[in-house]
Image (cartoon, rainbow, N blue to C red; front, side, top):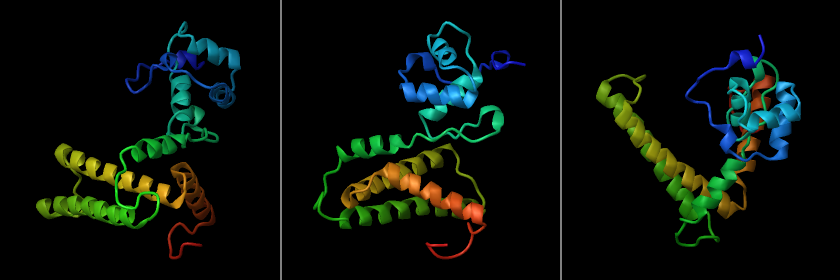
Length: 192
């Protein structure tokens, strides 16, 4: 069965023919699907039927979704540049005392917003008398808003520290992958 035979009408798949992809992204998709660059470009022209593997591969190179062709092999590289884009956009709304000079304000803000996420989780447990209760749709929306604030403060801290959110995310993923490989994902200490 060919990839084209496995076409799916999955509502989560994007309309990739409407997006402009870089040559590097096209080459990455071709390499990971083991097809020619020309085949990928033809697919992008929109003149061929939708292909679930192809669409998921493009989604992977433009997002943080770790796609594995046919569910096996090495995942496509994550596109963590979206973190830097978020950091830039969040910075346009950053108006606080000492901006560009101090970590203090955003660090306190992060602690406060993380506390609000914790508070929402605590109330779910308290109200349902169930430590493993899952949020309903209303609670999920409230948590989403608080997590957005957490993310904004992380972006502000990165700005103040001269860090890229992309670099922070990459370093964290590498650290955790290394710990998993070495069997020390559980335990104590930052340098394990």
